[in-house]
Image (cartoon, rainbow, N blue to C red; front, side, top):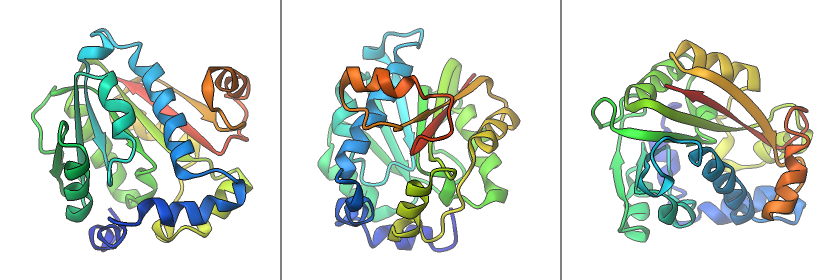
Length: 232
């Protein structure tokens, strides 16, 4: 993570939603909306796993206060969150006692090889120094089982509204955004295979109908965010 990142994110342990909502307020949408959309997309990716989704073991890297986990917990067999912020991990564990949360150093996941079926990193890598991104991505691959997947959700730096949000969000003052192609290259260099990416949130993709419309624009670089997927 960037210098002093654990300390900086500790400061937002109690007001994460409020801070992000201030940055996205002009859109008329709240952080919970964007969280739900990404959980729905990630859930669709989990459907492609060999084990049934109900039994899949998932690690969320850089989980923060785990605001998405109440939406995801019932869709998987085991949900684990790791983060560099001690305060955020404490809050995540207090709010989601059925899940497992651990502190980590930003590079090495505190789990053995082949421990999970899937991993996610939601708006995390833009906080990781460029020189350290490959190390983290490689360690995420290490903890995934054969056939497992890693989904990286990131801001689309080509979208002017997204850049406005990033420039006005206190969390993102250290952000170095990754273009979609950069994330695909990162996954390839980390040893992932069958890599692809999709732009999302071109329209407010709430519900299955609007998500179908959103998918029509998946290959156009106009969505507010994108996800990139690699397989082990």
